[in-house]
Amino acid sequence: MVPLRYTFPCILAAVALVQASTLWGVAPEQQPLYSPHSDGQWECLDKSKKIPFTAINDDYCDCPDGSDEPGTSACPNGLFYCHNEGHIPAYIKSYAVNDGVCDDACCDGSDETSGLISCPNRCKSFAAEYAREQAVLHKIHSAGISAKRKLIQEAQETVKHWQEEKAGLEDELAIKRAELSRQEDAMKYSSKKSSSKKAKCPPCNVATLKDHIQTLEDEIDTLVTILKDMKRDHNHNFHDMAVKAAIAGYDDFIDGYDELKADIDNDLLKYKEIESDQSTFANYEDDSEEADQEIEQEQDTPEQAVSFVQTALQKIANVIPPDWRGLIPLEKAENNDSVNNRGSALEAAKKAHSQVNDEIQQAERKLNTINDDLSKDYGEHYEWLKLKDVCVEKNEGE
Image (cartoon, rainbow, N blue to C red):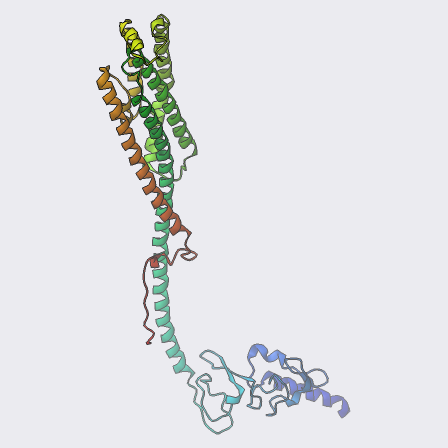
């Protein structure tokens, strides 16, 4: 027969295990925390002290954190676990246990076991009502998600349009600024020619034509460089039709450009051979009347030289933009008409310069507006872009 002193601890341990497995007011996942030590002691959950395991749920608060009374109202800071089978489990404050009130949070009535009141199990009806509420919330949530996705899609399309428009404006500004520089050169050239006192001298007309050829060749070379850089560096992901058209025009033009330059240089070389025989036109710096009379007595400008130069100018005129051709004197005119033409050319150059400058300023303002819009925070996926420039009002009752 086994002595009682050996069997008694085993009996106590067995009782403790049974008690722990059915500890009232403790959630299933926390039941393992309510296991006695080998000496029959139990440590409060906050590790503040040890008490006898039998002191748990003895309706006396021993632990500062109230963890020793999960199933009674002894500890005001404790929590009671409601199983609520068939519905959602919940916690209530320990002071509400056995207070004679059927708490909705404990729809199974497990918080009232003292006999003060009988609480029926209402979890089935609570679960049905909760399911109806969740269905309504789910419908609202689904509608909200759908609306948000639509806002995001529209916003991303707007941002993509802004980005494409920004790229187009930047390309347009690069072209416009190059054109503005060309117009400034044209203004300086026309201004210089309109103030020249040698315009009435026939040989000076040939020199003017030569200057026109050199200036236009320089401007065409500048334009070719700009278009070449744009073809090499433009963003191929953006389908800007203006840029594509410019590149296509560049490809068509560049094929015959070298041959054209060689042809023009050949014409100028022929002119130089004729010019070398004309020593009488070597000195036109004297503005006195005597010098003008001597010039008038000299033989006329060689028609052949003028013809060569006019031919070169005509070839250049055939390949440059139409707006530029007004600056090229393709026909010989009398002295007075030539002065008037140069004045008209200067006015045309000023007008074209002003127009291009206005277009640049307008494009810059538009680009600044787009950059400002793109810099704002509209949410991670631009979901709040729809509220841009929208005034929202709410009456708080005051």
